[in-house]
Length: 287
Image (tube, rainbow, N blue to C red; front, side):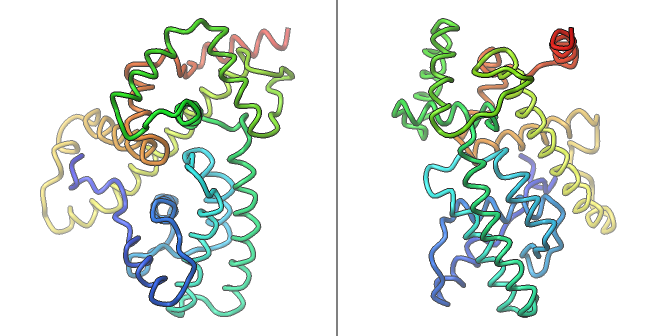
């Protein structure tokens, strides 16, 4: 990725972890904290000395609406709520919050962090990267080995449709699964739903990456610096860079490289329906 585009935030994760250790706070996994800081800045949080500043709407957007679209934690889903509470404590310590707002945000982060743990256990809210991350881990695949991930996907592709569906059904053991369009189980409606959720989550991320890039490049333009090559030519170059970075981030939050594989080489295992296909299905359910 061309760093001049400034798509993804360079978070102060290390600094915040060092501050927490110095002041005796409970350790927070670095991955969870970096994800929280990244999504908050991409979500439009005001920044102060490199840290996003929380508000009740931003907190709800992060914990209730966004994180379950992207992350599949190895363990400790509670870590995301703890990461948010650490950020709140840091804002209080640096006098960016008064005692009343600090207490209110802390309470909101605690109960919404618990809600997030529940959302992460609901199979009907899965996206394709999250779904295949669960299956890869369940089969004991070394997800840090790109060749092993690819080999597993090739073996999964070789299964019959019924065998693949049986693997999806296993995911229902994670928690309650709400019906889609009145249907239950892993049928066409469910596959359409997962595909739409995946497409929507990625498009949302791409949009926010673009907006961040434009905001930061305005300052570059004011200094008379040249635009990055991706913005100096066809807009398609910029779109491609944004799409690639969105897939990279989705991999960082699930299995590195997996989202790219599902889009580029194994799209048949992770279908994202076109508008016509969705309309055709909906017309059939109304008949």
